[in-house]
Every structure is written in C-alpha cells, then in structure tokens.
Amino acid sequence: MKKVVFGALVVAAFAMGRVSAQYVEPSCPGCQVARISAEEIQEYIEVGRTQNRIDQQVRSVDIGKSNVQLAVAHRGALDEPRPNSVASHSLVTEVYVVLSGSATNRTGPALVGRQPRPADNAAVQFLNGPGANSDDIENAETHELAAGDVFVIPAGTGHQFSKIDDHITYLMVRIDPDKVVPLMDAAASQAYLAEAR
Image (cartoon, rainbow, N blue to C red; front, side, top):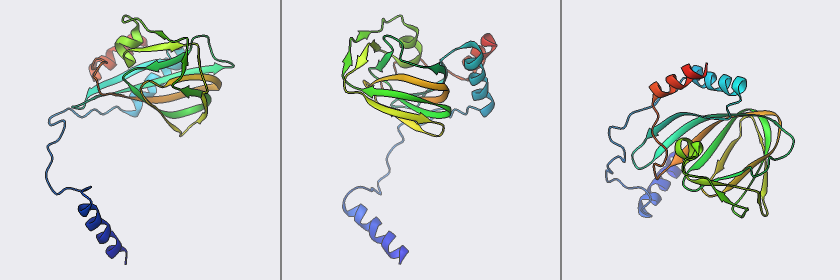
C-alpha cells in the first residue's frame, strides 16, 4: 500500500510540474567544499568566552550564486537591552543554532531611530555587510531561545537580545546572496586563532 501511495505522489508531482526529469546544471560547479572541525569551533568558543569576542567569523565560502558564512557568537549575561542595540542587516540573513545557554530576543521590521552603520564599520566590512543600529522595534515579537533551537532572522529584520540569563553561545550561518562579505578560508581562520590565543 505504501508503495502505491508513494508512486501516486510521484506521478502527481510530475503532472503538476514540480519534479522534472530534465537535467539542470549545478549552480556551483567546481566550488570548494569547506569542513570545519568540532575542535576549531571549540577554539572559537573559548576565545569568545575568555576574551569577550562576541561575533567571530570562521569561514566565508563562495557557493556559486551566493556566499555563506559561518560565525561563532558568545554573549554573557544581560539584564536589559543596551542602548541602540537593535541590529539589522540589509542584505544578509542570519540563522542562529543555539549551542548552550538561553536568552530572550526581540525582532521586527519597524525600527525606531535607525542609524546606518558607516562603511568602515568592522561588522559591515567583514561580518554582515550594510546595516543599521536602532533604538527600538515597534510591535516587536519576543522569542525565548535555548540550547538546540534554530532561529532564522531574514535580511532587514531588526533583532535585539533583551535578556541573557547566564550566557548564550551559538553558531551563526549567514546567507549572503549579494556577496558583500569577503571570503575567508581555513588559513585565514588559523591565522586569526593564532593571533587570538
């Protein structure tokens, strides 16, 4: 029975044009694969914890029509939001994968007191491209984040940590379709870690 149902679904998908038997050229032929070891991620976590480096780029990889970045972020305890701490990134979407800790994050598109970041800002140049800091978010949504959660923040959406219980450590995957963030390979990562130790 399961085979019959699966076969019917495949036929229906073909009929609706959702599945094509035609070969489509890959969007990134010859692009390099990037592997980042658990040990390397742990080194970034330790640097973040011991040296209070909140957002550290680990890689920035060309995947054809887009770049993708991986960063490690570690933030300590926070009782209330800092002034002008609503961040928004014009072209880059961020995906948080929470490794440990917990926090409250506010999000929304209606930014109050938006101030564009200057072009020579390090975050603009090396982490998440053009963006802004704002004073507040009108009608913000509140999200409780904990270890194991995945949190997607589309480009242009304001986001702000309003409370962090003890700490929050997360991997951040950045989707960069306009390729505004420079590439970063394993050698550059090792050089960064050597300088940070």
